[in-house]
Each structure stands twice: as structure tokens, then as C-alpha cells.
Length: 229
Image 1 (cartoon, rainbow, N blue to C red):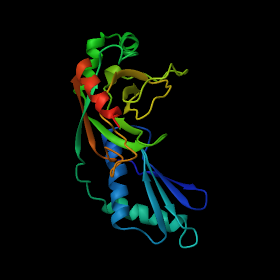
Image 2: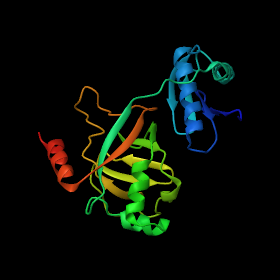
Image 3: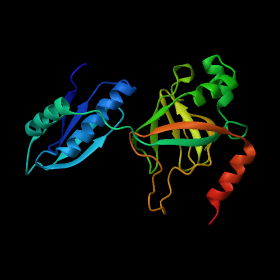
């Protein structure tokens, strides 16, 4: 197992990089370090921000420096214990038209039938790697290799909130309508972000997500409940 790279960030941060692979081993190392730093915070620690392949350690430069934080990171890496499993969430998704505008295109690019893309997507287990870009925008790692394709260079027409989109190794359930270069292969009535709820975010970093197929009628009922005042 290779040692991570420690990169100074301005005068108040250290970026701990575990490589470029968005896989379960890398994610486990990221989350184990984040948990270890939370349990044994060094002097001057301000924030620990885990991402897909790295951890940003933010500190107060009036209390400590890069060298001290780097030493703490190294010590915590050596002592880190495996993180307890996160919660498991089942998210409903409808793959029927018109909820899956890019399913046929993705299938063609992968040399598969649309049904094969759906089966691959349903058969995978996903891990919440990080939040980013927009509130509730939880990046899920674990898209099967058979349906991995890079995002398109030019965003397509806007897709509605709840759309399930994939690109590369990642998958998302978008909380708001938006244009994207990712492939929209379904739509979910599951509300992953509710700013008015006591707990706004459905999933936490490190949680597991699996998808369950539903039909258009069940999607319509779920969306009606979502949109109700």
C-alpha cells in the first residue's frame, strides 16, 4: 500500500492524496483517516474534509503549521482503525421513458441493450464518497465498469430533480433540475435533499446506496408526494 502524498495548501491546509483511483480501498483509507483525525485532533485543527480520493486538513496557522499537521496525519494513518460500516439506503428509480432520456445513448456507447445497462446499474452497490458542487449533491462511487463512459463535453438539455445520472465511476441523484454532461438513465422520487427538514441530507459520507426499480406509476405517486406543500 503506497503512502499518501501530503501537499501544502496555502498557509492553512494540508491535502492528503491517496491517488486517483475512485475505488473501495481508496475510499476506506480516506474515511479511516478522517475518522482518526476526528478522534485525535491535532492542536489547531479547524476542519477535516474527506473527498473521493483525498482528505483536506484545514488548520489555524496561528496555532500550528504544515509540518506539525503532517506529523499528526502520519501518526493517525498508522493508528487508524477500520471505520464502522455506514447506513444502507435503498433509493427507488424508474428507468422508463421519458424518465431516462440518455439510457439508449449510453447503451449504444457501451455496446449493450438498454436492459443490460439497467441490470448493471441495479446490480451494483454504491458508496457515498463526498458532497460537492451543490447542496445535496452526493457523489456515489461504484458504477459498474460495463456502463462507465466519460461525461459528454457539452451539457445536454436540463433534466429534472431526482434524475439518476452516471459518468465514469460515479453516480448521482440530483436534487435540483440542471443541465449536465452526465447520462440521465432514470429518475427517483426519493428526496435526497430537503432544506426544510431537521436532517436535510438523506445520506452521509461513507454510507451505502443500492437502487430498487419502480415503474412509472409509482414514480408519479412519489413525485406528487415530493411536490406536495
